[in-house]
Length: 297
Image (cartoon, rainbow, N blue to C red):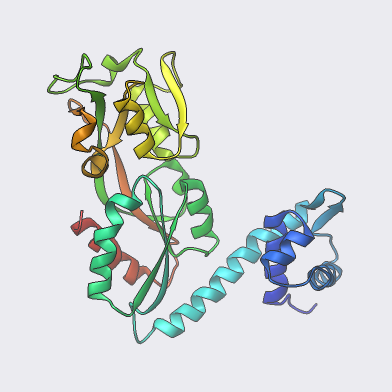
């Protein structure tokens, strides 16, 4: 049997991600008849159907699910082989696809990327901001080279290089009963209206873990999309919140009349780090990037 072509693998992945042949063709920048014909040719060669075709779209069969995982690995391996050739003699050149979660990117990356540009002017860093699950999926699929995330159980096989321990602090209005405390414990927050980010933000999960997940009576689920929104709602007297220490300088403006109260030891915190595929050819570069991030925070 002839080996599948890379183009066929790309078409299969595109349709699998889109859920339809039309959407897959758009993702692959090809015509739908071309994509359909190439996938059908591949199925004939394999002797199995990779997709169940129906009015509502294309669903992977059991064989298709097994094939997609290996196909993605193959494309990533080819991409990294190309990178290895182009960067063998000149590391820190070309393009780096970097991802970061929204509760880290605006607070760590501006100074970091300025230092990267100063040290390695030929290195072009492209930043993607997204939730943790999306970033981890993209780095595993090879769409991103590395991601700046908080450490969690979902890292799996990815290499994780810690760059900063980021403690949480309580944010309350100056008139709040806890505002004058030198430190507080999570137990003292019971029954307080806790304002949280929307589902998908790992910081939401961290906050609930600190205060006692699952959600309890008194937690206000505002589903805010940014820390700025949450802080403004605290300033409006709607509740309290937890902020990572790295965000304090940017988020607590003098005119908000808010107070940051630290937690007593052991201080709850999150571990921020750079994650990447363990077999990537860019390990040397990514380790150097992690060191820069750690020293610029």
